[in-house]
Structure formats: structure tokens, C-alpha cells
Length: 105
Image (cartoon, rainbow, N blue to C red; front, side, top):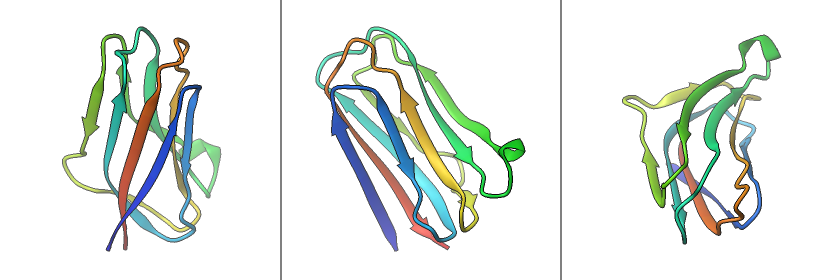
């Protein structure tokens, strides 16, 4: 069953997906009302086992971006206790809507 987590705002995007069960990341969608001017959006694993396992899964420069859609070639697996952190500093305070689609395992 697919689940959706949504966040909107005009400050730093600091979204934590932590469903407290094993899950698979299906896709990330982001829409900005005005194109971004700077910064890097990252999506990273926050491992329950140890910070030694934290890893950036996706990173992209945001300059000129209005719409972003990232879908990994295969779903990415997370074990119970792991989480996904999506971060962008949004220095120009663009209004955004971010949606993460994931499914249980």
C-alpha cells in the first residue's frame, strides 16, 4: 500500500520520513511557485543502526528548478527505525510543496 507524506512552506525544507516500520522509497516530488535560485536538495538515509550508515541517496542543484520529480530505478529499502531526510536550505524563501511516496514492506 502506498503512503504519502506532504510538506509545504516557504522556509528551509527539512522533511523527515520516519514511519517506524520497514518501507520502500518510491518517489519524491517537489513544486516551487517560483524557480529556485540556489542551494542543493538532498535526500539521505538516517540509519537506525549507526550514523556510519547514513548516506546521501540523491542530491541536485536547485538553481532554476521549479518542478522536480525523482524516482529511483528501483525502490530503495529502509529497515524499521531508519528514516529519510529531505533537506534544502531554501535561502530565497520560495514557497514549496514536497511529496514523498513510499510503501510498506
